[in-house]
Length: 224
Picture 1 (cartoon, rainbow, N blue to C red):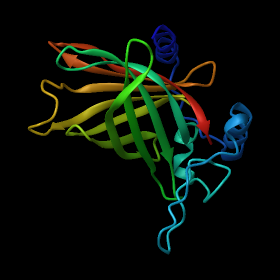
Picture 2 (tube, rainbow, N blue to C red):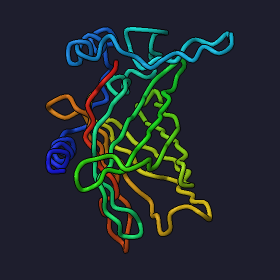
Picture 3 (tube, rainbow, N blue to C red):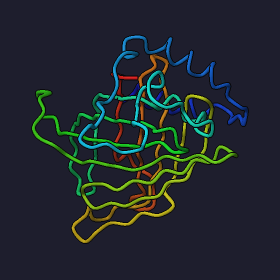
Picture 4 (tube, helix red, strand yellow):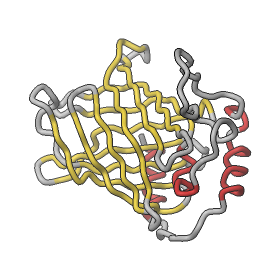
């Protein structure tokens, strides 16, 4: 994914800035960048009454984003696209992904990823891995991300903002169940908005003493 690699390199050459982000300006920038997705949102689960606010992946709808999350604001939305995976047993394959990053007004983001394998002709051939977790950020813009995957991985990442459009995370704890993937080393993830406003992300893993590509994708915002 050369375009993602270029995006990552551009991000790494950008000096981190610990500046406060103006909430209204950030929302307005997002609204202008993703006009086509502005009216769409994740569906509301309406099976029983409860006192909780609805979860939303659209900053224009639902509860207001918590002020503590302004550094993660551009991530909120529904994203979909394709990528490449390198499994721990040597398999390489293309995959599709739908990524939902949402909030309910509290000081965290919910994170849900679903992927499906794609064959050599570009056709989907069945579900792959699911991930579910949370993003949090401290007053010093220190990011915490936790997730659990359907293939038996539980992981904690810590990271920081490079700027208002890029985030880097590094795993601090990686646990795998007995039936999970073998030889999964600690990893690093980079998420960043590319010049075309797509979301690119890269996951690298430590293999034989060096970091190697594990998964990467380029996603288009489809809602939010």
